[in-house]
Length: 155
Image 1 (tube, rainbow, N blue to C red):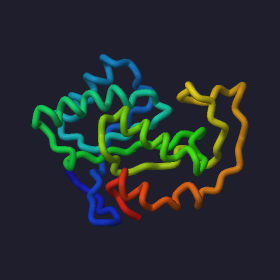
Image 2: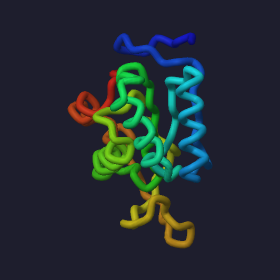
Image 3: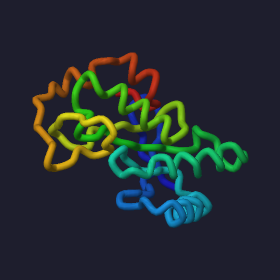
Image 4: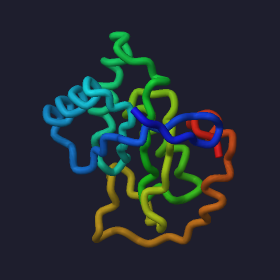
């Protein structure tokens, strides 16, 4: 496996498993197990894909069984469009970590450059109720303590 060097001394596998539109528990579980057996170590997901819990279950099984160590993995997830507000980033990060059953992720991205309102109970803001909100992208990422605690990659 080839890797890219990331800021802070980490390494990111150049090939990763994307999980967009993979929500069927059985199919995703099988795909993840096969990918991990084949040597994939980079898993890309997002809160809005609604599959972090499935991924977390599979990763926990691999880590608990000793087949993998957490530090062997590179996990990417994303802040949803309704989380693009400085008062919601930590909440969504914690939800993703809980879903993934991990203490940290290796890369946390903004999924889309604009933000909408947040409606509790929805993983995606319904189109008929979505309202664009102004967001301060610098303020979203200013809480360095948050990133030191939840992310392995430091910028």
